Image 1 (cartoon, rainbow, N blue to C red):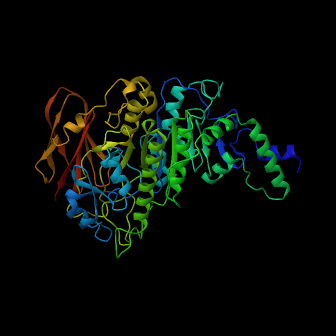
Image 2: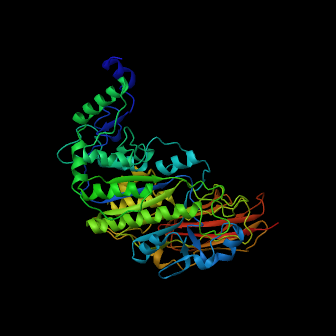
Image 3: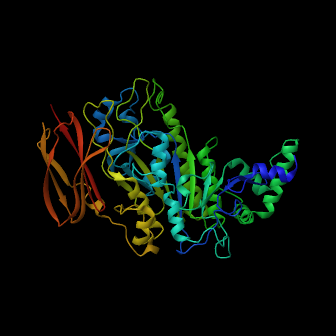
Length: 529
């Protein structure tokens, strides 16, 4: 095959293709050039970095962050997979909540003041489809809306509205967003072009910075591949800066072996220390779809899920230690997410099925270290349909990090997030000249929403206290879906009562949810026959 025919048949102008630089596999995306996409110049003066870790498959958050105060209900719901109470890892200053026994690294980070555990994160109408739920989390869309842009992609587009025209440039010759170990995801997709690039093979990264070519087959196609590499190496304008950044870091802390997440985070630490101005990094690890054999039957602290918890915990702890040793931990905050949680009740296969809300981790030297929110109240006799209702909309987490870490102003935040989501106190960045709201921490013990009677047969009254301003009152069913919105408006400060009529609803557990600025609270209600 002639070279020009090879290019014509394999590299159409409108198709994204992998660029290979000395074995360094990169995917660059742009509507105009597959070689210069994902390079940008900033408008906000910040050296802060956000690392997003995706846990593919739907993590069982109830066995990750364990509600010790409701241990009897927890154990009754999942006797075949429950963690023994005496094996749960304790957290400094916390008697009601603990961690899976494999997560000693995360326990240490919490006790060092570098971890915020956000309880019951989800959204009003949860999807139990891996694909749709992942799209929702990456795009920050409502359940009924399909968006073609991601939340960080929209953020980068606000910061760099002319991208990719004129990039790279002397002001910003570096990629803004890099995804390690996967193709570039929807999270990094802007309204028009993708704002990120991918290092799809961590192993090839080290060949790249060492100047070692991956071998090519001794075939005509292999010769063409070698030719593509040579052309790409000459034309990829960001190859030199990435290589220089990586080469500037000769030594790093020890990372756990045979840990795919650790391998990705090690690269991120190296690039941050090496001087890249990249703001967003993404990493991912899979295996969380634990429908069966989640634990070893003879020891529930071991097995598939325990190995997953160990992988996350050890990787993040090594990453944090490395950042500290490299002198750059003040620049980085990390976030974990999974497309959904698992059901409260385990199944007969020693596993858990697709669920709704679940906890997530925000970690870093500048997080407001605490447990945000309350342990989910678990029913005494959970059924296969019972789900954890959400306390915090995941988009509130995104909005809070953008505002508190990247100093995004309220107008731009509305453009990025598409709606106004309440702020949650997650981190401190003095450069933003603002303090994250701490009212949620001060009022964590207050009972802000109750109902009477409880249990109720058909009707009950829901009483709530608001500090004033926009207040949302919702009723959520066992599947985690919002089935009724009782109040969604501005109130003056005070106590209010709203009627709830459950006519036609089946008997079972329901939840009343209050959202008032940074305050969220969920109250369980029992409808009897």
